[in-house]
Length: 95
Length: 198
Image (tube, rainbow over all chains, first blue to last red; front, side):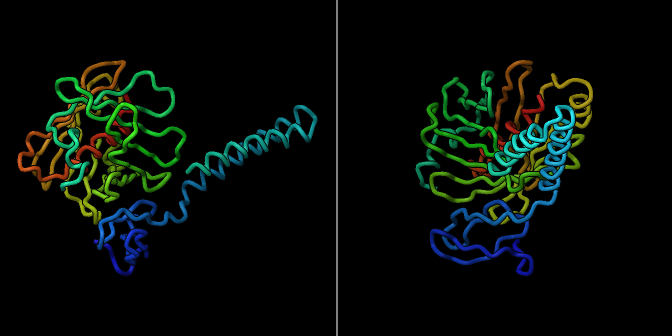
């Protein structure tokens, strides 16, 4: 059952009913107690996910440094980093 | 339920055959048949989504959504998936993977709309589960579905190294204790997630 102390406040878009969803439903959907509609519950910060993103960007940065030093061109390194960061950005934005 | 969705045949049948499309490049597609090989629904797992997103449609053209299932978190060892009736917009329940237990033997918990555990879906035997994980994944999986401790159905995979295919049998649930939307959603999700291992 949703705990009053740890509940996440949500408002049903269909009937405007305000209620608290269980903390375990974070990032998912809760059932509105009034009209039973599925209501999105805010996801909040996901430490593991962002740690993985940070790790990915670190690998991209190291690869960019490697490209820059191997080619002798700073722009090649910047281009590599921009490309890798753009891919990471697309992946993150799709979440 | 007297909605159009509740009357849809995929939610009326006790036995279903689910087959994964072999030629899908991105994501995963499933076809759901009755026991006479009549198509009753299709399912698609969206590609390039960090949060798992699986949908069930009423037809091959995927024009009418019946159920939507999505993960709560992007990265989650004990992942939970909410199941929503796409026709009425109601949440019908959720399933949660038991992360630690599933390392050795797949185990899922069926949750009601308040996130209270009401049932389980468990891989058949620990021995076979061990062999599947560490020796060969050619051994077909079998799951038992229980509600409040009572067995209500099974999922039985066929031996086919190329196409993932399974029969879902909910005929033991004569009183229809489990909401069929929740049952179908849970089974499709489980096959989509666990089917990737095969």
